[in-house]
Image 1 (cartoon, rainbow, N blue to C red):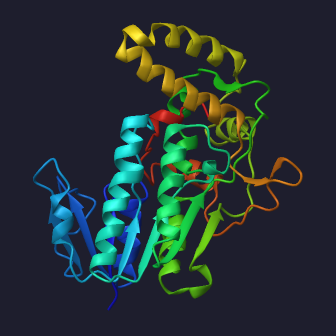
Image 2 (spheres, rainbow, N blue to C red):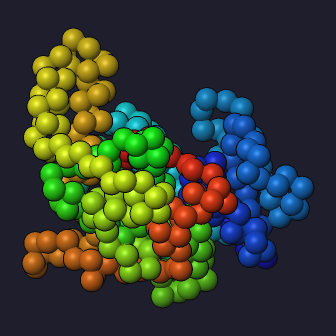
Image 3 (cartoon, rainbow, N blue to C red):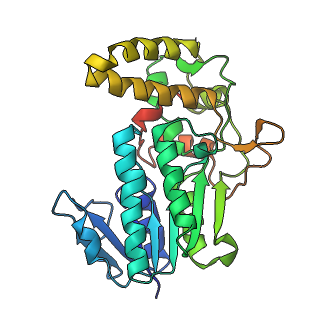
Length: 317
């Protein structure tokens, strides 16, 4: 029975990878400071490594792992956080994998690293480089967008507030994928040798959407009269300029300026395959998988079959 270690197991995608792995009869090891109710501790195929210190000494307790799966991601995306998590912690896990002669490392990265401008993107790319030269069988998975990232305005529109977007609402596109479909794709890399030693961009089942498309879908699903509010992307530039002026005197301003930079990136760059020849994002070249659609997800939230899980950092997608 294959034994996998899932890093970032308490995160949005990580916990779904754990769930799907147990359903597929993998032996699963996770590490956490606080055991979540999302996990069935009675499952004999699940082992929990407790993190009791602020350092990463717990990594030494990982033994007999066949496959490392990293779903780690810095929460804020700020430089210090990104360096610590997206690069350093992943590298520690990679070094451990090599020491115990593990043969496979699967990394959940992000499609936005194609055109890097942000701190966390450069840290992800730095680790991808380390992984590619490690000698292990690697799979680097770059999902387009998560359903959760497109759900931040649901509560607002239910209250009659406008749906907010930048520009004309059609500056960007994405092909979102559900946490279940992404988890199954990640786990398929364990046995599918065609996915080894490759970078694997992936989206959901043929549903390239603009922010305006998402808004229209939300109003239809939740049966609310459409209202929209547009902001120019230059507004983000102006806010960031003010924050940068204050940054040398305020750590708060410095932190917020980085977050505004991240917001500007997502407001102007599509989460699709970048075609270097055509110099554009191409929805037709972006691979897709799975069965779940964003519309089905919104209907499930409306009928309270699933709980709304908001990505607070992506409210204005």
